Length: 442
Image (cartoon, rainbow, N blue to C red; front, side, top):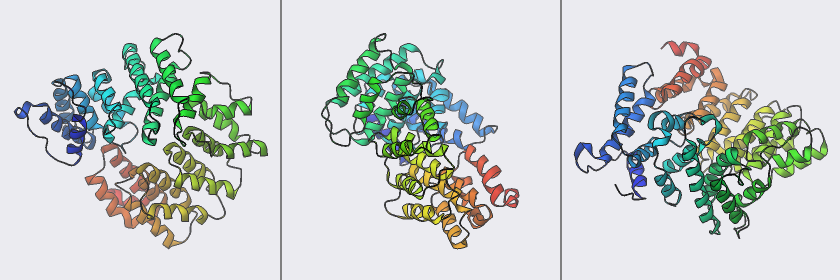
């Protein structure tokens, strides 16, 4: 079968809209099979794992995938991807259902070079590259990993020639590149594919990019960094490490600097980092405040609210939310609650990940707010965002406890009609139990 770069996008769009795929050759056509894959995958997520429905869907899906060639399996994998899925679900689909080695690397490269790729294709590419991580050592072969590095190098090389690379494209390349650097950083002299990747990174880092491009300074910093940095002894080194490619190194740097925030010099340096053009640096700087719960400052709380409601970086939003949660014992909770509610109630509404981070933060401030009208407003927001940002909504409704009793019918309707089995279990054993134990018996 020849590869048409628009094919997967069209299939993904049609399935997401509930449109039956056209038959090409009867029930055994790849298009019809892909429609069945999508249906079985949804059934598999929803059914309880010890039920006959789950076992049947699992068996039928495995048998169906066996009949597909690598390209069609890649199309099937794209159809399984979900933008707001729990963290485990997309990797599970790729590793345990389709098989990472069954993905067509040429199809992945075509997706990367297609500016019209769908969200599900974007998620597939990002999930696929996450398997470069050391936790998946035995899941994917070294030969395939080096093929992935080579594909990434060619994509970076092409992006280096474009003056205005979109923010979304920068973030996708960033995630792929981070995964590659965590495995191969500093090994450019030993591996040809890694050397080519470094060459492409240099071309991008020092090209004439538009103002506001965050990927170029990220690459420039990564090119000069050591794979291992001792951050626990020197504040200057730790500041630099806030922009390291390894999340573990960044976390250690945040923790070290967080314990040093009583120093005015370190505090001012961290505050300055909150304006860094690199998302990973702003996130790591915000995370430092999670390690300084004793630090009392309205300015810091206000800055975290600003980041949470306006910063375009998802990792920054999440870090700001965690920092606010750490500092939720402020004297004036309305200082946080009011602008966060305003952000959720405004137009356009925040993206699902920002909404989730806002709702999670509100949950920690809800018990500090004694006004019943405010709690009712928070409950209504939790219900409003149940399907759009379920993790955050359920976290908020659980935090409201008995004040969210009126939301029980909406929670149950979401549980019965929309939620996957993991979310249903959380609703039954955690959320409803906290709101009203009696509701779990109904």
